[in-house]
Length: 162
Image 1 (cartoon, one colour):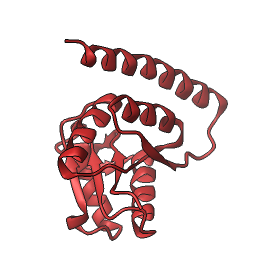
Image 2 (cartoon, helix red, strand yellow):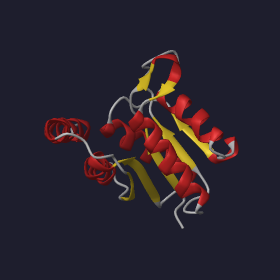
Image 3 (cartoon, rainbow, N blue to C red):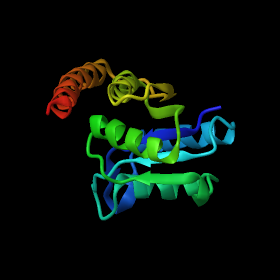
Image 4 (cartoon, rainbow, N blue to C red):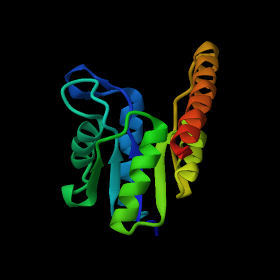
């Protein structure tokens, strides 16, 4: 059993509505929680696409899927995958958590796990499956992930410097 699942935030639609990607992440986290994978979910994401932070909107959605508020821990400082990892690892250590599972979109999972490893706490991945999409969309997604991986490495390198 893991100490906690970590669901990574993403874009929120107007009116605090979940986008398709956000809905898949929340659904996968709620499913893993219901299966008893971990007793807690750290909801990570401080970016405000609307009036509230990603983590707050995700927490409400998780509650609607049966996850009790007492099982949720919010991380509200992060604005990127590298920051999700850095701030969540610090929070997890404060809480005494050593075994984490990261929930994010399947195409994002490799980069997210690398960020958690770089932050000092390797994690287990839980993929929120992305439905089939047109070839150009998939190519754009791969390109975006590669550029973001490079940016994450720069951010990690910069954070490690004195």
